[in-house]
Image 1 (tube, rainbow, N blue to C red):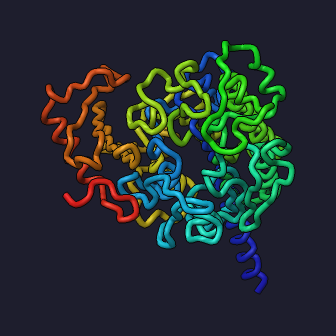
Image 2 (cartoon, rainbow, N blue to C red; image 1 turned 30 degrees about the vertical axis):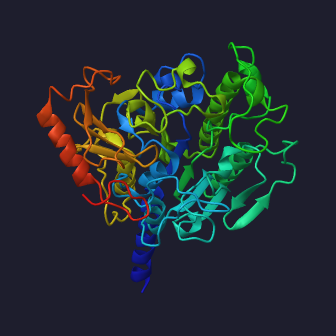
Image 3 (cartoon, rainbow, N blue to C red; image 1 turned 90 degrees about the vertical axis):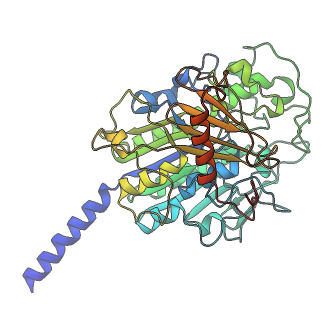
Length: 470
């Protein structure tokens, strides 16, 4: 009997030890941050020392892509491991009075897989994939804890009337059309840090889909704003099209939009630094994988000026475009002892690769279906890295768009809803990374292959129709 108890104890210790070896995962998703908005990617006007430190201590990817060029479908791609020809949510379809089209009960998410593998799971920021009480609510898609904006339409305001804590509506009494008392990004950050404290003794998945630096341009006139207040020539901006309160006097966005944008990026960077500091203080950095990226390219709403800041990093296009500036995103991974510091990767990957990579790393059950490949071999330098035959994107607004990247070739089709078999623009990214020269006429065989991939990758959705019956 003693021998049996001793053996059971040894197994328990062994099991506990293995459980503790599972890395914590912190996935930070900026909102509308361009490829060129970080110092690590060439930004000259805004300082981002904390995110740049992640890049120095980890791996910086130069050819990584968002799910698509607008919020909800890009996040759906990330959560489901599927590109926008397959993922459930493919557009910003609004539900009144609050929320967006919810993920269906049948949809499997990254958070659900990690939770089943023993992870504490928390999301703090903007969700946009299903209102409270629907099949797509965060607590029904694998998150133990959610705090922030459930509805991305509500997240246009940084001084909102309410936020959500799981199913509880948190009223922010001090915020109305004439007062700005409680700045939502700060409230959300407090809850994210508390999640780390609460779960420091168990493996956790911390998802931070921050609203910064999404429009509207707005924030307190504090040290972040004062740092840039007199740094740029400014044209006063009156109103930003985001509803009541947008033009109320006293908002930084009304007077100096460039300084306000820079301050929002600086605040986001400082919050990343706070997360790193908290992990370090608790002795968790040695066993924590941190990913930083953005949901799509830079926006132009609310007085934002991506041309001035070179937010697209020299690439063509911005948010809502399927040119490189709309979908190529900063992507940084730090994982001490596993990812070599100061490295750069040209691996051509996208949001749908994140799910299979993290299930591979954690030993979680693999997804029932994914369009992604694990890029763990790229991170660790061990094993053979699978490569995509092609990457595919859809955009369902402005007449509909499709895009394919195949090696160094990039194909873009416009006005898909009018003509599902319309002409395909073709660019050679190796020779023409800014997509200035359409070489379709000189490369009919490549164009034909692009057309085949566009037809193959797209499965028509009754909720988000794009091409209709072919």
